[in-house]
Length: 139
Picture 1 (cartoon, rainbow, N blue to C red):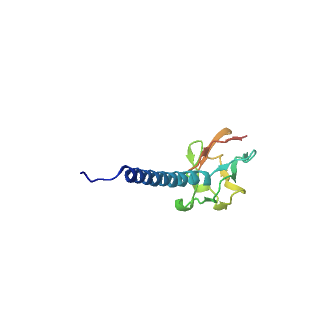
Picture 2 (picture 1 turned 90 degrees about the vertical axis):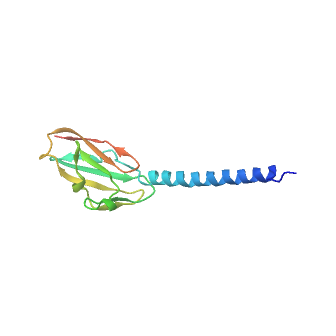
Picture 3 (picture 1 turned 60 degrees about the vertical axis):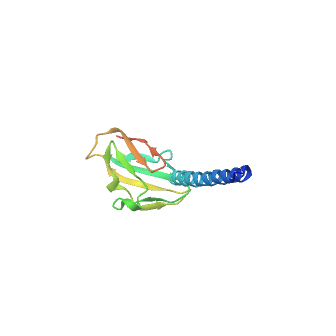
């Protein structure tokens, strides 16, 4: 007579392993998803403009967590990309925190007259969630 695990016990063990793996996968994916949703933002209509050669960018926080902007402290800066025509403008970011559902200025009075000509300019502004590319026209 052979001794071993009965078929019912082996099925229960396999079900427990499957449920445990599904729980781990769910926890990992939800953590990734909430990180992505948390840093969402948009540039509202008229939120990217140029006045007298000075570019200003305003954003609205459409995510679920605060958006932090800090030019000299990368650990406190949620904006991982901030460029105008490929030139890094991180040093010109405002020190600000924008709560969910609120708006604020991220880039204020970036002097475009010294580094770029008049006409359209592409702004790259992004968090871990997304990168937006609004176009700003400087006369």
